[in-house]
Image (tube, rainbow, N blue to C red; front, side, top):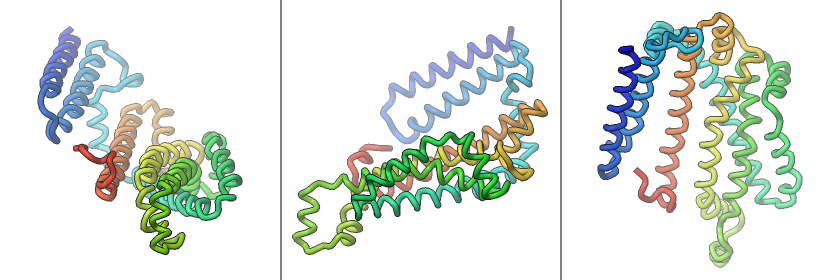
Length: 281
């Protein structure tokens, strides 16, 4: 009974603190404190409910057990992180996004390519990953190269569509002004169209961050060496080691949030002039 009362108390305290923060003027401190307090409240309620209702750790381990497993498994988690995130997801992300930007420039330069290549890109985006991953694993092997290939396929189309849309965002008056300066296509591209397309490009990059991590993890379910986050989750589920599964999920959540945050910070630095960035904390 005490654990259930603790859950209610944690909810009330978190609610009161966040209510007071919401009435204060927005600042960096309050913007950061709100999510942190909410997250801590959820963790406390989770811990109290699992303990109070005597839920089996196989169904839902308490956060204290997950933290303990996380600390005890740091070398293992680090090896899995390097294999999945650094080698698989990041490599595929860079290759897929770079190829999409280059193809978008080619489509912009030669408009007839748009009618032929965009439907192909749409077709690739519609391919189910659970059917595509085993094929790419057979083609590229069980190591990280096949996971990077899956990521390339997943991030390519969102990046391509956003970049093509961004390159066509400039107005006729802006393009006419560049022509009056005798600027050719490439100078107009680098001086006007690519800078104007940056918000669209970063939108595609942010979408691709989550797709890259999901693609790399899911692809490891269909063949992997004895390391990797997807491999570890699959094996741990079979062993009913759900605390280790949750530890891997925590690593994936931290990695995904950091990856997205880094791209968002780069966007704010490079596109500070855009109206969408004005007034942001």
